[in-house]
Length: 491
Ligand code: SAM
Image (cartoon, rainbow, N blue to C red; front, top):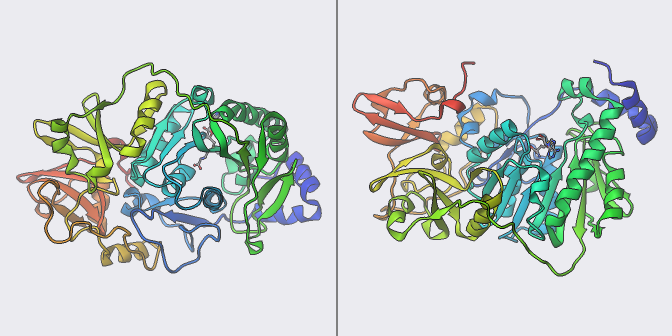
């Protein structure tokens, strides 16, 4: 499909003769890239890195990610390279070791930047991933569960609903809904849906979103505004509008000249543009604003509902042993389910759950029957699940599986076993069953799996050392506990 003429005109105004190179690039194939989960795998020492990301890599081909158990186990996320610039921004403005932070990803689905921010902010931080469209918030929650860090709260709210959280967040990302010009080669629907009036509507909506969320940023806090579109109405013009409306200053981000990013400014605020003819990634725009210093009047809304019920000491006993570092966690029940949270985040989660529509939070561990926990799927994917000492360490089969999937020549899990030798009594560790690729795919399709592979009772199902779910063997039968709604359909 042809590029819309008014779009071409606006690019010519922006880029002059260079615009023809942009139009040519928009007719080429998009690069394929993934970002590793460093809590499940260590960095890849070889391969072509996305220059502005520690964890991002280009792939030569596009494998069928849906059939890869490592994807379902949260070992990596498929993300377009330019978006990974948020990693470089976060590191530049917040440093590597600033936890615990309160981070808001306001327009978060499907979760590319959420999983990135959760990784960077650290386990002791609270990352709120909000998505206003309900079905998209559910897909976001699935991706957050796969990632398995336990430091994210997924909410399904209008940006206005954050108004009660005044001066509360240290870092806010507004990755705004936009006209999507930067996705024209990746997503043909974006071309078909584009119109000049759509651009104006998007720009106005972006300003409403920014206006709603600005009071939630604490004085001195950072707001990143990003879009995946080229036109100035949704980018520089909105940055200028923010400098008129808000008491803020721009933040410069050091950028390597060889990366191909176009650095500019709007009303003195540094801006960063990504063009597919200048670098290996889609169209993207970002600017960082720092809220002026001042006294913070931190406020949270009065809770409308009782939410988390902290577990008593006695009730904690059957659940704490399932995680490797229970001393850093607090456990609570919501209805009949038990959840685990990092202690530093607990009060923030309770405040959020009191007034927002929480779709997922922390780690849903399962239901307690007497003195036993029946584990739920998110617990299997938790990066800090208690495991046998011989499991979870560097694993040759994981390396081979990644390379077979065309993903990586050499990757090892990052977390070394914490309990070498004897597992302390208080840890609950399930037998682990290691499935070969086709068995693992059958498990993910929720098909029957061979009972002979399993021990009696609940087993942690792994592929190449990476947990992908639970299964319970009762005699000759195996109850495949993989959630029905997540099963992969026959491909
Ligand atoms: N940050 C996401 C990621 O990296 O995976 C992509 C976000 S996408 C560019 C913008 C999101 O904003 C979409 O999920 C969309 O549903 C949501 N959205 C749409 N209208 C909105 C509104 N009025 N307020 C807030 N978010 C909105």
